[in-house]
Every structure is written in structure tokens, then in C-alpha cells.
Image 1 (tube, one colour):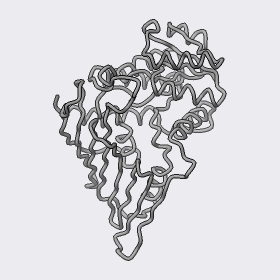
Image 2: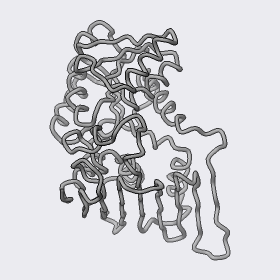
Image 3: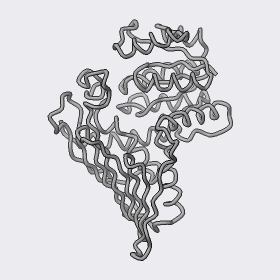
Image 4: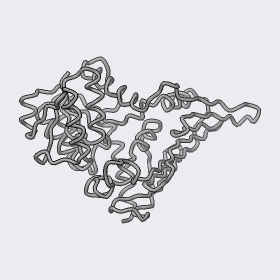
Length: 333
């Protein structure tokens, strides 16, 4: 297939390399006349040196008309996702939109209308839905292994200074509100999987904002409580500050507790029966983080081929954004 990538930062490069390894034809749209960070120039230079020069366009409509992609990958900064998606959708392009869908509600209904009218195939890039232990955790909860869920706790903390060794975080969009940055949207993977497990909450309570000594003006520490109609409660913590990083998801039920620890690479299920030993599951030894990105691309291709429905369709991306914006509107800066 033919894919046009809009944005060649870290996630754009990852998708480019993965789709190239799968044998697809690729092209890049570069906005702003091609002025890029050194690490982008390094990527382009390495591809050229390897005999794989990146086909590049500087005019978006020209790229669509000439390259005629089967789908457009939207991997530019968060604040530009929707304008790019709308432009591509108006030209009838299928879309893979990296998370989050956007940083505001502006344009969402227009995109939904276009998608329905033109019968576009769309998937949102929340790759953790392909994490083997999260998939197992969801199955175990659905099978009643821990009984009826009563509450859940989620924590995601990672120091933004450690993200990309090739750039100063203070020059990246993730640290700024107008770039669509901040812990809520940049860590919306963790909002997505709570939505994947439990759906939309009835109420959201949140505190936090710009709290740590980090640069930038986006929120860097947030705590939220989400209430559901059956009295189920989720506590959510997100921050840009922690070292070492931490990501866990814990669900407490009437019969036990199940905990996913991303960095420990484990899933632990504990029964309320003190005589029952904990069950501990580990990632396969050959598991690589990139496997999730490859798997989501393969599923997107199956969607384009009409073999599957989208696992994360536009409406789900809109729902996750709605939760995210519900948290953001309550925090202070």
C-alpha cells in the first residue's frame, strides 16, 4: 500500500521504519519548507545513505494528488492533528491519527461528518491496546477473575527531560499549551485504556496544573477522580516529573486485585482468599516495545483491506479526548 506521513518526529520515524519493513510505499509531507531539527535531518540522511531516499513533498494537496495514498498518517504536533486530518479527509483520504485526536473540540464534528459522508476508514494510534499484559488483564476482568470491580488506580509519571536525548524539551511542543502539550494529552494512553476497560465516566474531578520547576507552560502534574454510575471510582495520576518513571494500573474487585506494572513487565492477580498464592504473568522474553506499533499498523492495514473494523475508531478517539478535556478544564496554570 501507499502511505503519506505528515510529521517525521520520533513517532513519525517509527511508523515510517515499521511500514518500510512491511514493504509498503511511503512518502513524507514536510510543512514549513523543510526546516527541521537535526535528528530529523539525520534520519533523512541515513535513509538516503542506505539507498532509500525519502520521497518528499512540500505541498499537501500536491502530495495527495501525485502520490495518491491509500491512507494518510498524521504524526505532527498535537495542535495540528485536526487541521491536517480535515484537509486529508476533504480529499477522501483514510486516516491513521496519532494520539491524541486533538487538543480542542474544534473541528471534531466536521471531521466526523466528512468521515461518514465519504465512508473513510480511521484509526487512532493508542498502541497500548496491543500490549499483551493489558489485553490479558482486560480478559481476566471481563471473565470475573477479581469479581465486580470496585475501584481502580492509575499512575503514569515520567520526566519530560528524559524523553528525547536529541532535543531540549523546552523547545518541543509537549511542554506548551498552544502546542497541544501537557501531561494529560501526552499521557492520554492511560486515559485511553481506562476508557477501553470502563467507558465514559459520569463525573470528573481534577486538580493540578503547572506545579513542578520544569520549563514550559503546560500542566506537568495532575490528579483526577472519575466517577461511574455504578459507584465505580478511578483515581488517575499523571506527571512530567518522576524519576525513575512509573506506570501502573490496578483494579480492586470484590474477589481480588489485579495490577499491571509496565516497567516491571508484570501482571499480578491477588485473591482476597489469603490461602491462594498470587498469580504472576510476565511478558514473553522475545517481546519488544516496537511490537505494539507493528501490530497496530498491521491491524490498520486489515481495516483498509476490509478485513476488520477499526479497534479504535474516530468516536472512541473523540470520547478519550472528551475525558482529557474534562480533566484539563479543572486544573490551574
